[in-house]
Amino acid sequence: MTQTTDLTPGTAARQDDPFPVKGMDAVVFAVGNAKQAAHYYSTAFGMRLVAYSGPENGSRETASYVLESGSARFVFTSVIKPSSAWGRFLAEHVAAHGDGVVDLAIEVPDARAAYAYAVEQGARSVVEPYELKDEHGTVVLAAIATYGETRHTLVERTGYDGPYLPGYTAAQPIVEPPAQRVFQAVDHCVGNVELGRMNEWVAFYNKVMGFTNMKEFVGDDIATEYSALMSKVVADGTLKVKFPINEPAIAKKKSQIDEYLEFYGGAGVQHIALNTNDIVQTVRTMRAAGVEFLDTPDSYYDTLGEWVGDTRVPVETLRELKILADRDEDGYLLQIFTKPVQDRPTVFFELIERHGSMGFGKGNFKALFEAIEREQEKRGNL
Image (cartoon, rainbow, N blue to C red; front, side, top):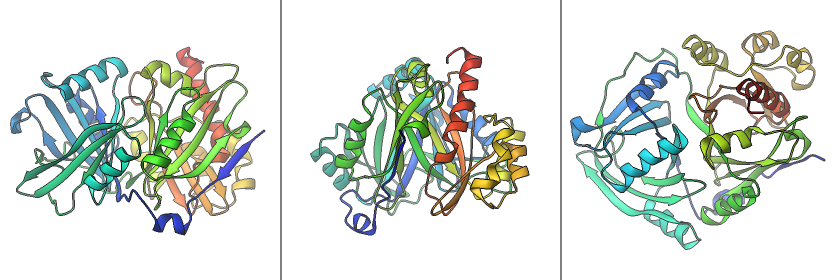
């Protein structure tokens, strides 16, 4: 039996927000080689290097590269020679998990107040509030723990006009970015957690950060013949920050969530969805740069127009580029998923173009999961 519930927060919830946020500040990756990662995301994702921290400007332990595309900001950090608890954590994290997300940083209007509220509601403190200053102003930072070894750094940067944070210097692009941005913003970040722990983490976001339940997917619509999962989406009151939380469900074979948990070594960020205003140009640009996307059988498109209706992109173009489409009561969306972007079958990306719909492609779940299963089978992990 399928249960699909839309729990989009109402106006009252948005006006009475105990944990106000301004949006995603950065997705921070711990990687084995930050210089090479920065080059990959510059060339393959069309991002622009804007800031750097490393031995050349006083950071003896780590090297970090900050890349942006619109409001989306990725930070890639690798350890040069660990000498502190943070450096050892990063080195051990990469050794245990491979390249992955260690921090989903959230911009808030008041980091001290946000931290105090979260800890009062039961969050585990990782870093107490502190200030960083330079000639560009002051930033207040604090951090709390979430699933696995992931953290949320709370960033208050009002009045700060530097390239990223104090300690970083402006950097020139590695390559000239495309004339048209490949994507504009982070749409949502998806976490995978262990069997039986999804509701625990949903309750964490409800209580600790005042997030509300936006949607939930439980049942046949999120299953195939062989594998299944369950998912709930939590979001802040303005829907600027959205975190779907997945857990595996009992099925005949190993699900994509089981595979992730096995190869990542526990809970963590599975994929990052990126907003684009022109998914056709985005896919063409990224594919030409070497990004691999999941395949979709031609049969998916034979009846697509019957249930999704007219979209900005003709069905034949969707078929050519293997882009998925879905429609709900608010509008429609177009989406496509990359294959994992590292050797371990863990982190991947979604490109999404929204036209009214605030959904997550429910009508595409079966097609998507079957595409993932085909890749799992090639890897011998189904």
